[in-house]
Amino acid sequence: MPERTSYDVVIVGGGHNGLVAAAYLARAGRRVLVLERLGHTGGAAVSERAFRGVDARLSRYSYLVSLLPPKIVADLGLRFAVRRRSVSSYTPAVRGGRPTGLYVGTDEATTRASFARITGSDREYAAWRRFYGMTRRVAERVFPTLTEPLPARAALRARIGDDATWEALFERPLGETVESVFDDDLVRGVVLTDGLIGTFAHAHDPTLAQNRCFLYHVIGGGTGDWDVPIGGMGALTDALADATRKAGAEIVTDCPVTGIATDGGTAEVTGAHGTVGARHVLVNAAPQVLAGLLGAPSPEPAEGAQLKVNMLLTRLPRLRDTGVDPRLAFSGTFHVAEGYRQLETAYRQADAGELPAAPPSEIYCHSLTDPSVLGSDLVRQGYQTLTLFGLHTPARLFTDNNDATRERLLAATLAQLDAVLAEPLTDCLATDADGRPCVEARSPLDLERDLCLPGGNIFHRELAFPYGTGDGAGDDAAARWGVRTAHANVLLCGAGAVRGGGVSGIPGHNAAMAVLDQE
Image (cartoon, rainbow, N blue to C red):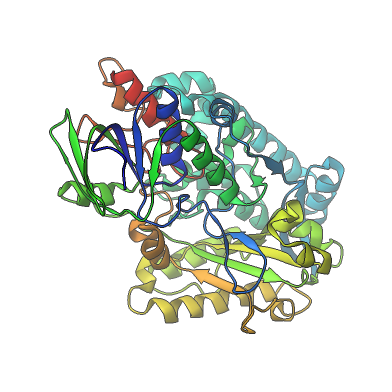
């Protein structure tokens, strides 16, 4: 039960963004209450034993960290660390009738040789270096703005300081840029995938949804690197919950919120344990969920489009490409069926209401970088985790029969993986205490059920470019920080805020700053 009947701030949802907001506000001396519907905090950023009787704590939903600013870790004194992956990606291919693959790692000579082997020259590697040099410069300029008041569009463009770059990433469909820079179909596909994570779009989508997704995937940390959370995603949210409590905030779990009433100055939040008053309410949930709590008309949900699969293996499988060690191939992002034309075909099939015949996906092995997620016996025996994220599987495909469709899609996705392996994946799967294979899959509808993500959209709604629509003059604090709703004292602090999406804590930070700026 909450200790009080009234608070300065009530936060609805104890995911990582809600906890960031709570910790900042409690440290600033505000009386803060966090209400979480589940029996634990963490939301999608949790570590759980997914398989009965098996000592492996997997990052069950979200699984990598790219957008969490070191500023938040330092400000809140979090005992949390990430580890850089030494390999960026590996993409299996067949060239000249022989299995091979494109390896991208930190060693320049090895990466250059891999590009030459796949493409026949140094041209694509040189283009790769130029292209990602450009995105690195954008990252260095844009990432620091994410924890500042929202810049106007013109101000962000001026900050980037390169009209050609602005046009390529912010104005023209990403496909135009990819096709003008790269010639090889496989290389084009590897680049495009960052624009399609959880986003159902194609390379030339006129809405630029793919551009916005791509931008958020290449600016993290000012470098674009994706890091492995030591101890799994739950290590982050456990550290945040600890920091929140130490700052003096209350956290009440098993307390679903059923309604919010506000007159713009004060509010009441009703949940399983009764009603509490608040000056401010921060909502760490999708805009559709907020509308339901307010009794307001709900916007259309932004459709999710991903398959999430967790696996535990007794060992890594051997690859058809004998020129690469599986421990290297799986320690970065392992691309499957993600050539440029393959991605377009999969999109067209899904858009027509069919499951992709060759579902694209990407895989990585957390335990190669951070074995602490496995029990010592499993580490000693050589067990490894695999996390698979499938693309172009919109929620609409699952509405008739979610369970049957998920199983069909899982089988087709693993068949694409088997096509690049020298042995069936099933030969490597561990089994749980009941003798069942250690593999679980989640469709968009499963995420909607488990995590209250309307449409299964992992970003809560379509991502927005990280700038404001005006010049910032005269905006109130909520608008300046990109967390505004229709009510002055009700703010978004989750992924649905401007500059939300991904595991970042940024919208939580920004909502807290907006509250402090309002007072």
